[in-house]
Length: 129
Image (tube, rainbow, N blue to C red; front, top):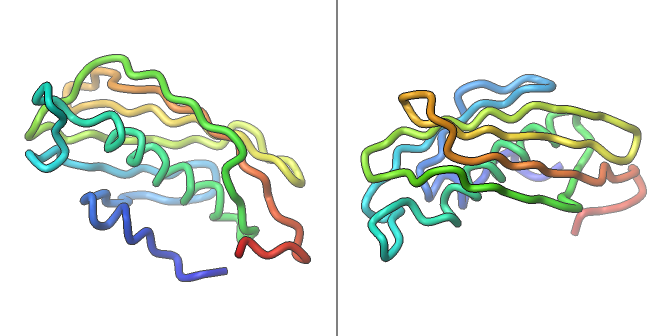
């Protein structure tokens, strides 16, 4: 498997704080560079936080996994200075398909967004490149 580093996530400031099979937790502090024209966190930044923990969780088993489907529901806005915490849980792990959910909360434990993702777990003879 390729290097276990998310260069894009690192660039955004995403920090993985816990990882084990079935659970990955990360955080991101929203800064001015993460804001949209309304002065709130850009949806793409929040999605990227969810996607980062989803990607890490789905690849922890040592089988390269790639997203088949994702969806996100935005519940409330996040603002500069807020620390967002993303918690990804493995819901279903099958031979070729796995499903994960991510909840993103702020420091007041208010729900910011919900994410759901499905991955394809590649057989050894298939390369992700």
